[in-house]
Length: 522
RNA sequence: GGCCCCAUCGUCUAGAGGCCUAGGACAUCGGAUUUUCAGUCCGACGACUGGGGUUCGAAUCCCCAUGGGGUCACCA
Image (cartoon, rainbow, N blue to C red; front, side, top):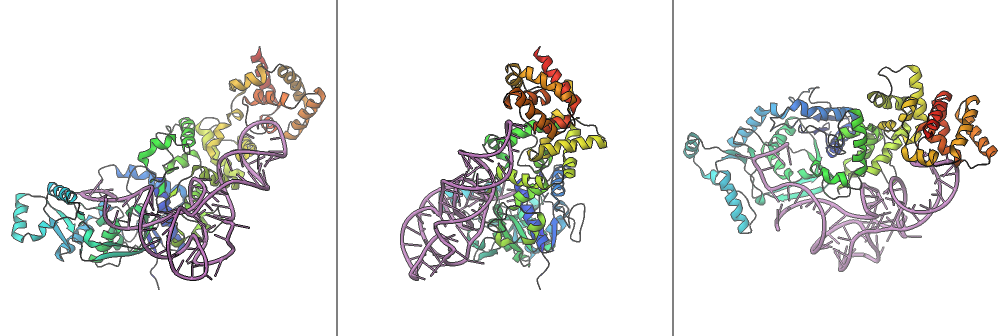
């Protein structure tokens, strides 16, 4: 009988949710769900002066958007709360007291300057630095004297230097360290606050966490944490150190600090450019306020949770040798720690795009309408309250756009359907090339216009036939009329199928737009 | 630099000694379809870091080298 699985993700309030952190959170969540266990959210705000609430909002938002619910944590509570480390200091304090009382931790009165000097001389001697435990030799009286003198001290955990520490990591296997080479970690600062490395151990134990799944950069910390668990009389949890995500085209950890490099990287350039096109229209700033390292970028851009989840699941994990498209349920069912890849994985925007496209294509039209609607409303292309007729038109546009719609905000590329005829903007180059400079075009367009006046019905198939007949009758090539027709009715050289576009616009608007275009020719 | 981790196509991955003349996906490049763009279909290109072992047999196990990365705080 094994204990029910309990996992946790412990973000600190940074003001945004990192896509790499989200991947870690997903794996943590997945393991809990796979085992019908409990997923806990715990806030690591040990050194916080900032506005925690505001800095946390985007993090909760990201979890909710992706549908990763937490069973215990902020806003939902739970039997092991509070779930903010800043509110758990009494637990850390009593753990420290216990360790000191048992001689497993000690007050260290060495000044930072002394430590730095020790470190420098160790380096000069080409020796591995381990702290010199001078304070261990202090008598009670000497300690008392230093205290009255007002000399600050930290509390350090006394590492058993005669031991090796070993873990059996669920993804990395057996890993061990030599205690003789370890610095006694500070567990309490001189100002009485506690360090992450310590708080996390106390919390993981108290919250009965069975599996600590976290990014690989914590692997080194695990030595001290394991020792701490043992000193506190706990059985350490199972550790699983998953590889971090690298920046596209790089082998280094994907970090917000390198954002300017990513901006110009061939892989991510498009993502930034798209942000600069889309976000200003929505009043959301630009690529400086929301970038592809942040989960919110994808949400605001109109990606699907399924697309992002699929991408993240396949980064460092796979089901088998060929399955690419995975629903969350499928991943939950099949997710195991032993199938996690050990090497770091790069986030590939192209591949992300392809997963996204797949899931977008799975979506029923009605859901696509619901997804696009906010973008049209935000940009005032449709009113706040949409009547049935408008909704039908939107549906027609989306159907015509078909798989050109990869993310919901792509609908912003089809303004020609929502703009008034007199406000239609013509692509300058296209207008010149297809109408102004195309000598035959205006005449042909004029003559086709007459036929559009009466053709019945005004639908895509009929228009298609009409134009083809027109082409035959006039002995021209289809290219001679179609481009002019497209630029005249939609203002653009590219877009959805021309006859679909015309059918959606309807007879009156098409004719009116053709007239306006011809008028511009003078 | 010490300690630790990692290493298959450009990228994400399959591979747990023979099924591997190494499979899939994305990207790329051809071709087909087409009124544009996108898409779709077909095809091509393309990898086991190197060297030693172990074994009848190694991408798979061991060792060494090389390379990449993480971490060395009174950050998390």
